[in-house]
Every structure is written in structure tokens, then in C-alpha cells.
Length: 160
Ligand code: SF4
Ligand code: SF4
Image 1: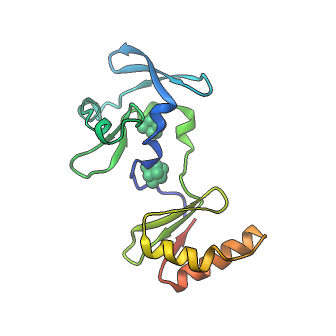
Image 2: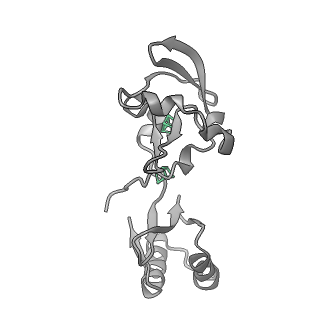
């Protein structure tokens, strides 16, 4: 299964440290500077996201959020308000290598890079500590198979 973003917005919560607005060019166009690479990108607020962009309340909870990240009050999902013209580094980003989904079809955890585990799910975190952390398996492909079996046996689904 291909990577499918669930619009939680977490990946952009601290991107304000990377993407800063260098210039407001008017007419909803901004010049964005990547603080680390120096890359400059001209972005435009998507035509259907002007109202969303004008709501700056996200910064009370997430002061380091990317200047273009917003949460929609209706569906509570995160939106990149410059999605159509977002910087290159944002385009290919996928935040997991393996996605762990619980029996209700909700994201329970994710594995980033080769083996880095992230989860807010206490049951899954416990399972991970008890059954997966102690696994000694140097081969990454075999490790994937072994952990997938453990997770499936515990009622989770693993997606790539
Ligand atoms: S890429 Fe991942 S962290 Fe970012 S919004 Fe989508 S699901 Fe959330
Ligand atoms: S430009 Fe969009 S995708 Fe990129 S960090 Fe900002 S909100 Fe996220």
C-alpha cells in the first residue's frame, strides 16, 4: 500500500524553524527561506485556503509550526495552505516506512527510517518494549518480517 498522509500535521509542527517567510510579495505570494539550505521558494496560498490561512490560532499550541500549516476547525485535519507550490523538501515527504494500524483502522504507530518506532498508543508501546525491543535480528528484511508477525498476532495491521 502506498504512503497515505492522515493529515495529523505533526511533521510540520516544528518546521517554522526551517521555513521562514523572507518576504511577503503581496497577493498571497511569499518568498520562503530554508534556514538550513538557504534555498528560496516562492509559494502562493492555495486559492481555496485563504480563509484557513488567515486563522493564526495554530501558533498558540504550536509556536514552531511552519508558517503555512493550519488546522481546519471543521474536520480538525491539518492543511498545508501552500500545498500547490510548497517547497521541494515537502513534496516527497512520507513520515513512515511502516505504518501500524489498530483493529479500528486508526494509526497506532509508525516506523520511520529503518527501525525508529513512534507511537502514542500505550498498548502498542508496551508490546514493542516487551516483544520487539529485545529482538536481536541484524537483517533488516528479516526484522521487518518478524515484527510484522508479532504485530499481526497482537491484532494490528502493518502497511508499507
Ligand atoms: S506526513 Fe505524516 S506526520 Fe505529516 S501530516 Fe501526514 S500523517 Fe501526519
Ligand atoms: S510548506 Fe506545507 S508541507 Fe511544507 S512544512 Fe510548511 S505546512 Fe508543511
